[in-house]
Structure formats: C-alpha cells, structure tokens
Image 1: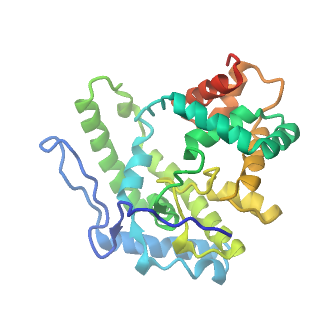
Image 2: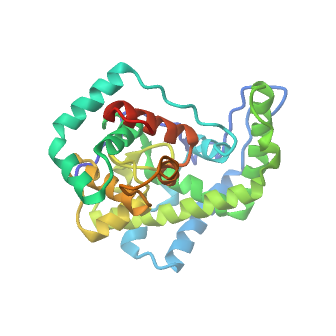
Length: 309
C-alpha cells in the first residue's frame, strides 16, 4: 500500500500550546484570538477514545489514538463550521486543464472504458471529478487525517461544541461585515445544531478511519489528505473507502483501482445512462454538495465530450 506523505506543514496547533485559535482579520469587531481551555480539549480527546471503546472499536484499532500526541486543527474546524455560509467559488477551466484531461483519458483509456461499461458513468464525468478533486493526482492534500478527524469530532463534546458555536457566529458576522456581497444567511444558522451535526458526522469518519488503518495495516500518523479528511486519488472520506476496502484490497493511490471506484460510487448514488440534466446535477451534489463544484464538473465534462449539460 502506497501512502502519500505530507508535502508541507498544515496549520495544526499542538496541545502543548493554545487549543483553539481562530484568527480574525478584523480587529475591533471581534477578538483576534478566541480559544477554548486546553484542559477541555485534552479531556475531549479522551472522551472520544472512551466512546469509541464503548462502541466496539478493538484495542488494535484504538491503540494509535493517543490524545497526548494529537494536534488540534483550528483551520479545519473554522472552515467546516463556516462552509455553511461561505459560498464555494467555481473553479475556472483553462485550456491546459482540458489538454491535461484529454491526455489523462488517452493514458487511461482502457480502465476508463471498462469502468464506463460497468457503471454507465461517462468517462468524461469521472475525469472531470478527478480534475477538480486532485488535479489528476498532483495534489492530494497535506494534512494529517487523524488530526483533522479528531479535531472535527471534538465538536460533539458539549462544552467544546457550545464554545465553538459562539465563536463561529461571531466570525460569520465579521466576514459578512467585511464582504458586503454576502447574504445575511449566517443569522439564520442554528450554530449549536451545526456543531452537533459536524461533530457527529466526523466522529463517525474518525471511527471509520481507525478501522480502515487497522484493516489495511496503515500507520495512522502517515496518512495525509484534504483539510476535511478526504484521502487518495478519489478523495474519498474514510467511511466510503472502508466500505470498498472491506470488499477487497484496493489501493486508494492507484488509478487502476480508483477510476472504477469513482465511477462505481457515482452509479451507487444514482447515476444512470438515462439521467436528465437536472438529475445529473442532483447525483453530483450527492457526491459533493456545493453548487460551484457541480457546475464545474458538468462544464468540464461538456468540454471533453462536446455535449450540452
């Protein structure tokens, strides 16, 4: 199994330092640093471990989860909490993007053709997702997946969740004040509910990741991915990767394995050869929700295939 190592240091604050540090660019409107007590964060990591043990994770799966060596990723928490009110910017498509995509199709023509035949997902759609997710495998993320998932899972701890909810509301207001084009939708967000939803979902991903690493015999500290914990050429979250890994051994960093799995995942969530334009958008939004993501994939697909969306 080929694990891609980190290419740069992510923004991760050691537990020996400040536990939570949200940087705010507008001094005077909000504090420059908003932080939770270090003791609460350490206790929170310990509570996560105890919960996972009660829920059936084995000693082998839990051994790598050592609260004393975890780092809290404040940037991931901030990004995930505020993504609900931060519109994703649509990625532009350059001529070189199209050239590289066509070269990718030619280079992997056989496996793409087989995947398309088995899944009914056009090769242009699969390649468009590969383009937007990892730029054809050239950028796979540089963050510790363990630190990312553990940090986001902490939001399910009531004391930490309440504090982060308050911080997020303040920061959302600051960003809205600075960018007058933003809607005031941050005012309607139930931030307490948001922290609970994020914490519960990424707690599940944390459990899946520990099981995945144990099953695949990976060193949890040597797996790096996106700011949200996605890994491999397909940028799968651990729960998705685990489902496929339990079926048979797969290499998440190998195109021969990942091209069919990306196509299969799209088929699994609803893609078929008879889909209308509207329903294709719906299926892609299940793969990755932001509207800008869906539009970029469909635009790239159209440019590759020479068809309308």
